[in-house]
Length: 334
Image (cartoon, rainbow, N blue to C red; front, side, top):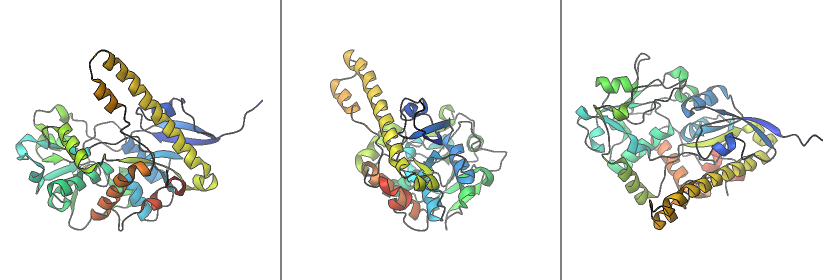
């Protein structure tokens, strides 16, 4: 006997512990057959914004807000957040550039793969609010070319007072950092994909250092002060699908919640060995048992609204984007 037909949807996202149960089929969304493709986020967002290749996908939160603000209604946001980082702690600087603290970035040449990407949005916002360095006091050099960038897909124009140069196609952030043509980089990507072209390993280059001598300590300081663990990617579904099959929205959210629970359970299973052998204390184990990543609007409202405020202040969106303009209505109380 043939079972009930499921709605077949293409899915694209990055591979990480919170997406593995979806990708390998351990978790399935009720009523939906997902056909997954693993794509690097840089390439994925460009493909979605430019060509709308997939029905459901991971998506840059910054670019999604910009697209919605400009009237692009192709996508409905899903509050599924499988990755986050303290992006400002990953900034790099040339040792010879005279950059010993964030304030020293004023007047410096700063590389960025994509000015509007969410990692850069957080980096600039934190530099301004935590260290008094606004975007207008740095000179930005963007690596991605218009034909292969989120900016090209969303018709982004530099905000007033902000200087953004285009890195020539024959160069890259990595090459310019090593050559001394850039002083620092706000974000750095070397994974092979269709839009990023830096390949130099700056993390281990003798001429390069992290902006913060102890990046982990800076992340801890920022989190203790603000309670914010920056989100860069959410997910989207085609609006036409969400409108024709509204049940899909919460079914997908439930599936990713289940995948997140599996990731949490597996983490705890690994911790048991460390506790039993005395490698970590029971107190540390209790702390690790508390999930650091949760999906949904309720658990992440402050983070999302902070990103929306930064987007307005940095000239990426012409008005303050409300979360109910970005995410599906059925998810707003989740």
